[in-house]
Image 1 (spheres, one colour):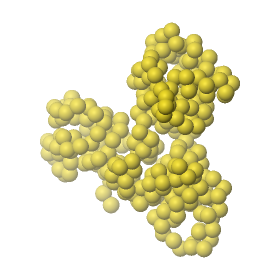
Image 2 (cartoon, rainbow, N blue to C red; image 1 turned 180 degrees about the horizontal axis):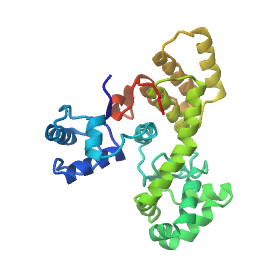
Image 3 (cartoon, rainbow, N blue to C red; image 1 turned 90 degrees about the horizontal axis):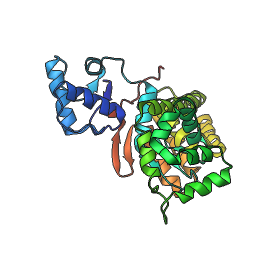
Image 4 (cartoon, rainbow, N blue to C red; image 1 turned 90 degrees about the vertical axis):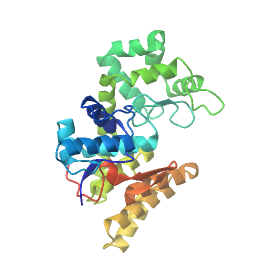
Length: 307
């Protein structure tokens, strides 16, 4: 099976980096929009032609090396790119108190309710307070105070900066301040480190527990960790029962069983969204939030997990 790292339909910061390099070399004339569409595909084909590479229009290992000058993206980076697209979040996107997260921000959807947003912001505050102050100005002390306040007060504050009636949109100046904060490379680095240690590392332990051997299994476990906070006991029992009764089942079939078990254990209002995401990971293709995904073009496939 041919290895593609970025291809048509892929979205995210890795695509943006490739577009920026293609632009600097004179191959790409579009906007750096982090979306791998027809203009990007044409630019990649022109680059491949000039470099005497197979003219596929997709970025494989050789094309990546020649274009980017470094090793291809890690499994963590590729899993993150897909799950971030599912979540609908970039580094600066922020959403209000529409759910139990209270306030959601950043590449993986760090939340005030879970304390994950607090951890990111407090680390930035400790090491680079000037970045926080430059983005939040006179609101800085209020923000930092909220991060260590009692949970009831945190929830009330999140609701106070959210636009009713749905509370999804955050009011100004908070919305612009959070978006500006997410544009800082130093802040992005903290977000990535927290996404890896808090979500990817335990996801790989789950992958080991489930004895999944392919990259799509690793991606599925990562999405479970991010969206569902791990594997619930109800889902775990169902998965274990299937494994005992069908020890010879192939991995894709087993991944689909995992996907459905996780979805059926979710709250009813989220169940079908969970199922769409998890089945897309299990099969390597599907539709989530009305967008089609072919994960082979996101650098994920039925390759052995080797990191």
